[in-house]
Image (cartoon, rainbow, N blue to C red; front, top):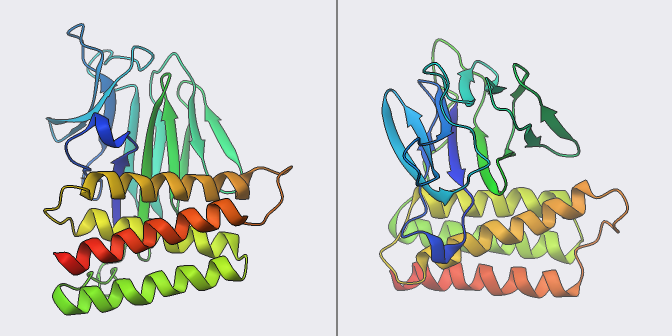
Length: 239
C-alpha cells in the first residue's frame, strides 16, 4: 500500500508540486512558531514547507503537531491532536469535522482542510498492508510506454465524460494527477498543468458531493477536461 500527501496550492505560489510519503511514520502538520505563519509537514523530525502561510493553522503544543496523519493497515488515520480550530476531512459523499482529540480512518482518497485556507489531498493506493507486499500498486511506466499509458488514460477520461460517468471520471482524473506527481517533467508549464488537473478534479468532486446539484458534467467542465488532458499528453510527448 502507498500513502502520500499533496498540498493543494495555486500554481503561482509554489515552484514545485511535491508529494509527501506517509507510509512508514506519522506526518504532523503545523504552523511554525517564528512569525512567518509558514505551514509545514514534519516526518521523522524533518520538516517540509507546504508553500502556504496560514495564521489559522495551530502551532505545536507540548511537542505535538495539531494535526497528525498516521499510516494504519487499512489506510491513514487523520487525527486532530490539539487544534483549536476544527479539521474537516472531505470524503465522498460526506464531510467529517474533527474536534480536538477526534480522528477518522480513511481507506481511500480524501481532502483535509485546516486553518483558514490550507487544503491537503491524502491518497491511499493499493491493498491493505500484509506481511508480504506482493499486492502493492504498480509502478507508472517510462518513455514510450508512458506516452501510450497517458494516451489510453486520457481516452478513458474522454469516454467517461461522454457517458456522464461523474464518479469514474473523477477517479480517472485522480489517476492522471497521481501520474503527473509521480513522474514530473522538466517543462515550464509542469506546475501549472499539475495544479489545473487538481482543480478540475475538485470541480468534479463538488458535483459528486453537492446533493442539490445535477450529477452531470456539463459542457463547460467537459471542455475544461478536454483542454487539460490534451495539455498533459502534449507536454509528455515533447519531453
